[in-house]
Length: 173
Image (cartoon, rainbow, N blue to C red; front, side):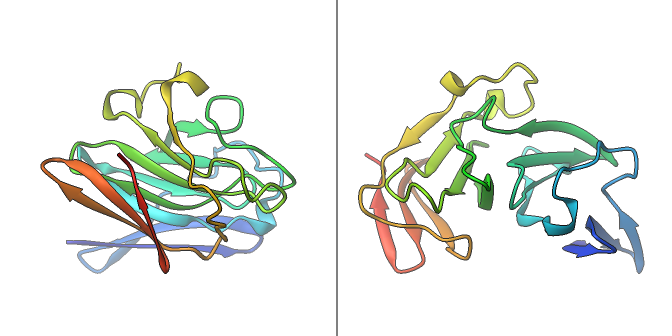
């Protein structure tokens, strides 16, 4: 098996994999510089259930990234997702359901009533032409999220029925 770890060292993000006793850095030095690299720590890391070499993670300032075999495959920012950037564009929790859909919790401290739960269909995850319209936004009402909030998907009959946030439960349908 493989073990994954994310951290910030020497003012740059690190995402590493331990396999057969050897560590491999999965974020190559060739990635473009991130504007707030000293504050980025990979959040909500998840291995894609449809491609075990693809690792998704959120960042505090710069949305979502997917790395595969040491290469950046796709990134989601306020330009191609419903995430807003109000000083931060934090995606602290990512999950992939059994159908391969990508679920995102977006922390937006300055607008706590803004839609903060998004889902991107499996067939769009690796598409470089994704737009805001490709995402499904869920209004979580008065629930306020933090970058430390946990998220758990509860599925029934092959689809997500509930999303649990820390001590809160949100029904999707």
